[in-house]
Length: 242
Image (cartoon, rainbow, N blue to C red; front, side, top):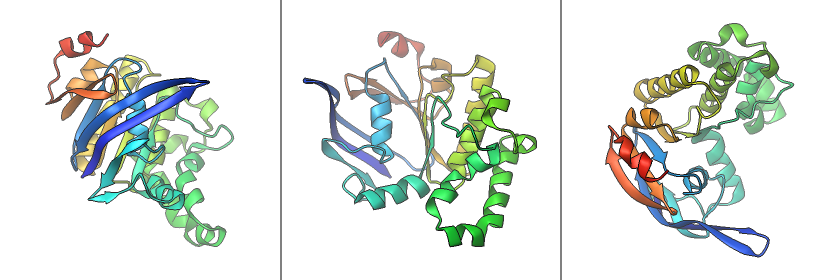
């Protein structure tokens, strides 16, 4: 169980305080596919970053299996980000000078010592190739991002997120930079990972069709949960927030 309790988060632009999350509480259940929806500025991405230890709240807490994780040391939060949470973003964040396979292997590079990497590199490369095969990119494993389409880059990003066998996959607008058909293929991939690998998925999306197809939809307004219900999600809820 991943639980956020009474989360507040404020950012500052020069001398102006901009509250983003204003007392948000939400539980993420093991094995579910949850969508976060709402208007721009409602705090969806900020909340996702707090859940995955990419940022820390001003007040409130985030707990995993009853253990508070937002107050951990930087090193311990780094370890959680590397092994417990996988991340998929709208703009891929692939390193342009590396091949698809080497991009997928980046979490292993980061977490290993030099000696540890050379000792286990064959196993890691096999794992990376298996993931690329699963997302339909094995034949493109030596291609660099500039030689790949947007959908292929996003598939490589999904494979990278799965390398360390995370419990949670956090996806921030994973289809926002793709056409409808390619975006749908990415969502189907996430659904298969959720179903077959039991990976818990939390996804930020503006797409009502995508939200309707997930297990639960949480609508955010003004930095809080305004509606929390099982799918299917009614389009009028998205209309209400613009």
